[in-house]
Length: 104
Image 1 (cartoon, one colour):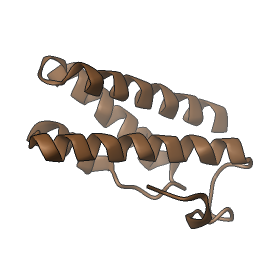
Image 2: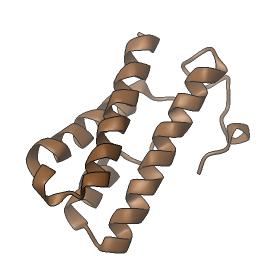
Image 3: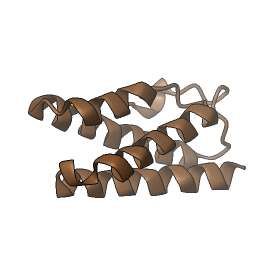
């Protein structure tokens, strides 16, 4: 889990604390998904997640790439995912989209 003290505000592409909190929430959800999928040995979802995460939080390009990867996971493997995982993915995709829209 990322702590606010670990984020370099000078390297961050956003200007207020609320945006930093959004990035931290996204990262925390990814940590939760990672833990769940490791414990259940869910290889396909892990591959999609780890292709784009962990990532430096100061990269909007990588954040968008994470969003596309998670959306593809939902599109192509929705039936193989647990309901809670699908909900977490939906929330994460919406949060990333909101952050990227707001910053641009």
